[in-house]
Length: 307
Length: 307
Image 1: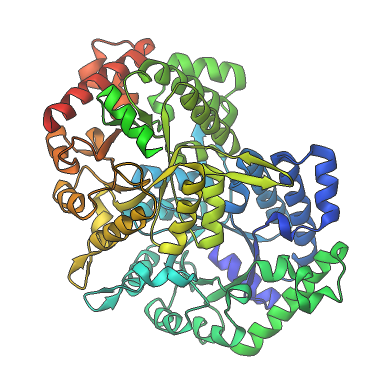
Image 2: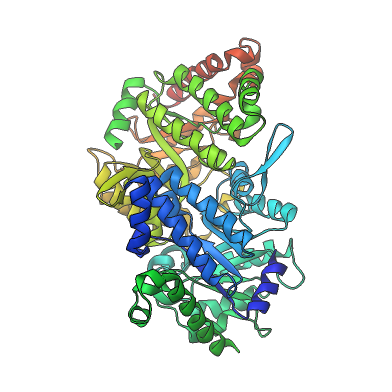
């Protein structure tokens, strides 16, 4: 799957992943109204609005980018109905040829991590049959529990030819509270980064590993160090745009081959229609066209920094 | 909610939480057969079996223990149908007067953590209505992303009078890989423990905080240190029984008031009917009675160590 991801990045010339992290206030009134008219102001109504919104966004951008990253929390907050919308979104994106990175940040002890890995990347055995649960292509994983929390994901990835991105240095302001603390003089994120590189050796694609890392765009200096520590690790870079990361900061996350990183933008793309830059050109009804324009602008910004 | 938890611990004289972590091979044949006959060997069939199994277990133990801890991964692996069984289980346990600790180990950056907190402990706003998603009483939280990943949970806890348990030192063999690394000479789990105590000050019940900690029974020496660092923090202690923790190891997790800790057992209770100690006395059909006997034995083992 890492090879497929790289192929599609090359084909689209866009090392970009669109974060499908819908908030109700990103969704234009006409979609909300239709969904609420049909199902009421209920979780089912909200889930229907999210699904219709996602579907239009995906149709508008699926030829431009290699991948999408739905953030499961934004669906989980609506309970079961929200997760039904997540499931439909994952399936639809895969049908449209997009690679789906489930931003689930799961991580637990051995058998429990195995259950998460099964539910999101693998197949669960029921009697003599097996079934895929949420069936993403990649998942994000929290490393705090150590190797025996991560290895079950790697085992499932080996079986299913899927991949993970392990949290190393996250994009949020207080990520340094634990991640930057010096462990024998080395920041914890570097210790985790070395471990990710080591795990990655176990499951290599042709040039990069199936085991990737998450490193926030908001910390380019640390990205530079981590890029060197993990030369064959694909880096998923959140924090571009709304969180403050800029194209020129991103060059350090890439290798000399122009590969090695994929940059996420969520709000900056999917809620572009609400931003000053796009509001004059796009009506709320044209929210998906605004997202397409924002993807093209992001592509130019990033490629100008790395090419 | 922490005060309610303590009240119920006192009433039941059992600082015990039963982990509702169903695996299909824990479930007796007669339940599986009935569910599969009705819905086939499908996720719906598996979910029905899990639900019937949980229901019988809960009926058998609800007067003996203050709380249950369903591990969401064990449900999530079956996709939507599994999560429907999780949701039904949570609701049923609460109806039966049990406090529900959702073992979800979520944690993300600010707005995303807020969505998880909303979905599991709070209420989501949809138009002019608000709805609870999964509606547990407590949730477990992963601290790797720092304060701005944890604080949104605390905010929701303040609003809803609910609580969290933050992972400090987990029970698994490789938990030391990152958690034990010395940060300026202090192990990371101590650094996290101090932070948990600090967060806890912000939201106190009458004697203990709404912000608890997870510390594995398998590391009693570390539990002793953490008990001192976090005197007003309730400690959720996994790893008793199947993972190797024993009653006599657990005294260090409690304060002199006989409170301050609640010990989890999952497999040791819910799959007691498969264990040598209980197999002779209980048929597979009497699995719930075996679970009840195992709770009583665990209660005696723990109380003999702490009283």
